[in-house]
Image (tube, rainbow, N blue to C red):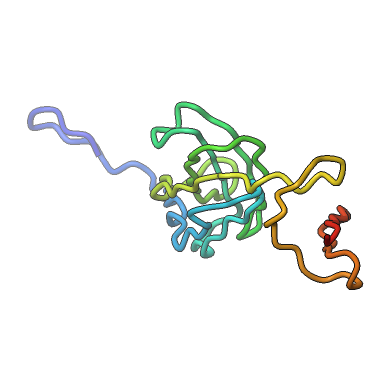
Length: 152
């Protein structure tokens, strides 16, 4: 209906209007605060109406120094980072191609790589504790790398 001064039109034909709300912001973001190999998992709780999720990783809390931006339909994402430092992670819910939630609160993780494995060709620290073996040698087997230290 329109009004102009005292004049008034009749009612227009009714129109169907559909209102869509974005999915909920992901909650329960879980990741370690410290990692020693650059490989870790990010988890979150399923959001109502979400059909997918977008995860971002940056070198700063403002997300201006982006490292990764990935989409997934899963509630977890496996991350592999090759540089030490502090990283920030955030997640948002997606619904179809048009609707998305706000970003979750960012969470941080510090990557500090563990010491290098022992190189059998180099002189070692004689106080380095290595256990196991056959009585003549101490040793261990880790991810396909065999490390041995002779007992003197």
